[in-house]
Length: 242
Image (cartoon, rainbow, N blue to C red; front, side, top):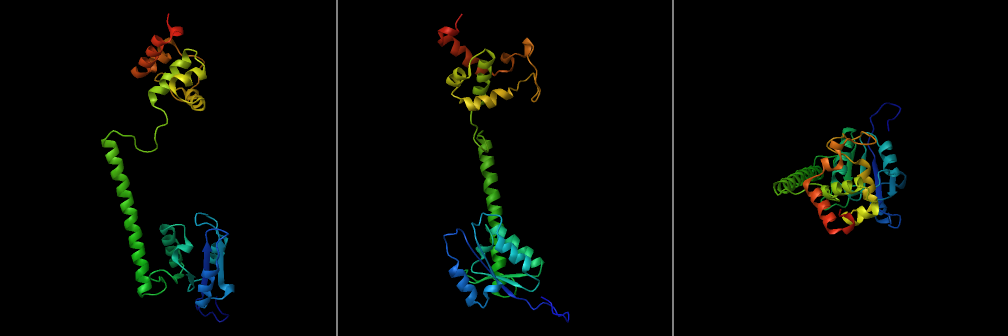
């Protein structure tokens, strides 16, 4: 707030409190902010989970704050969903000339000064960056080990490729979805998805033709494992012989 004489903004302490559910109480945080000398008219609050993107109270506070102000919270985790978000918000506020101060963290943090509170925040930022690096290194190591062991990396495959090929061959031979599901163990809902795509070595994905020439039949694109499955099924199924 600037006076009519053009004097610079003195800087206000602005309070913020948040709880994760509507059943939790803001009272302890609000009492701590009041004890720190922050009046109710300069205090904003939210009763929402930290995972919720929209926090009206915080947004109003950020819109009200001016250079020289300090946002005061009970603990630093009140202003973000995770440490990275907290650090990003504090960094953005610093760019606007707005400080952040916590009241009840093990080592009270303040980005507005140059004392221990500032050092504590810098240490927090350092630990967060170290954890990000360690997490990336652990993920890269896990991928390398999995690839060296010829294991699939990422989400597990729902159904093996040879079973899907076997299902396509059965469909090409006129089998019903129920019969295909019984022989492959793939649920009908998944079969609808797999069989509707029906890619092959002879027909590019995304093309639709009523029929393929004989040399591009289902047998032509099948793996040897799938062909072994169908031969085994014919030899054990009297209806399929002859």
